[in-house]
Length: 461
Image 1 (cartoon, helix red, strand yellow):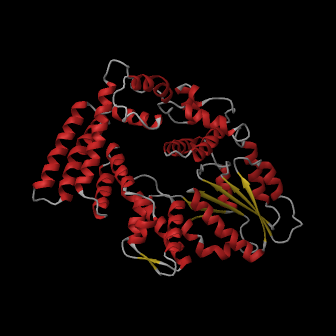
Image 2 (cartoon, helix red, strand yellow):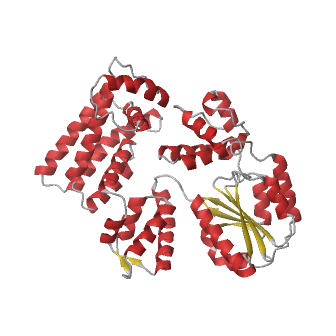
Image 3 (cartoon, rainbow, N blue to C red):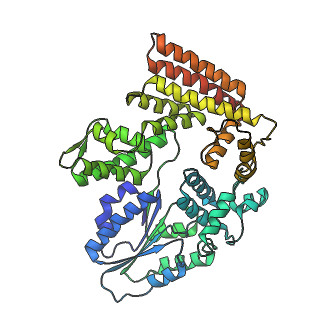
């Protein structure tokens, strides 16, 4: 058959689902988009042929048992659709880095479920035993096993998630023998009433199994560009706008000008959240045909404080382009420039205090210490001093991340930034320049030095 983009699926859906059409499908890429596309295919298959859908969790799947079901004639009428979510058939060392990155991002966002799922798939790639701990692997062993360098920092969180997953999930992955059995089945075919739908976030396109499926079935690419660059943001926004338009159409609603951009800025690239927020807005306006900016302000949960936090997060990461975009959107939404400066001043002041605490001889701060060392040893000793008690409140992991970020700054640099911020505040209060220009000049001045230093360290400037 072929490999097509998700956008091409709708136009050929009727043909793909007809009797005598493909019996083998793979959807790979962004998880929600894969599920949504598979739902469309299933609905059309059932509409044309009738039948049943057998849902199988790839984390718990016995791949050979699924293959046996596909090769068996069914006594039930209509199509028998075997839908495997999170299939592990197409993973290898090539996908290991992507699996780790997704696990780490999910853990940082406080989403332990998705993080655990990615880690389970990661250890399945190399066939690690359930009791083995990632944190104990030496760097050369990690590199050889997974094909990328061992991440720094404390990996105890990964060990804990894998231990909680249990032996059934964290067991060895599908062997080459299983792949050969599937390839043989692709060549010979199976009863026409049986349909296999596979879904996977990460796939190794070099595998013979992937090539065999592409030859004998239909592969649908549901991936979306990642990152914060202009090209990636355009790709992400296009996907989200398509989903918003389809959801609004189902409710026979429209959005007032500018509301869509505000919604996407608030939610970010989270397809599930975008659809849920649009549905909530559509239901809240009841009989009114149009969703207004006032409806968005009332119903969508992102607060001004959330947006200001995103600004400091982008600034702390040295992302000048993202910082400027968020700054402009804050100003467009009525946030005064002085409020932006106040938030930035509090952020820099916090970093300066943390950096000064790190330079104290007692308790001794060790750069690069693990989360466990920080939480069990350093933080309790620091709290015993009784200094900056309010600053040391909150979740230990959040404090650990703040201390880790402060390591990269000197007190002199932070003091210099605070002085520049004060000068910008004076200009805002008494100067003739527009607030947008003053903030732009401040962020460019502060972050340009960070980016220049980064370029020099990498010998790229």
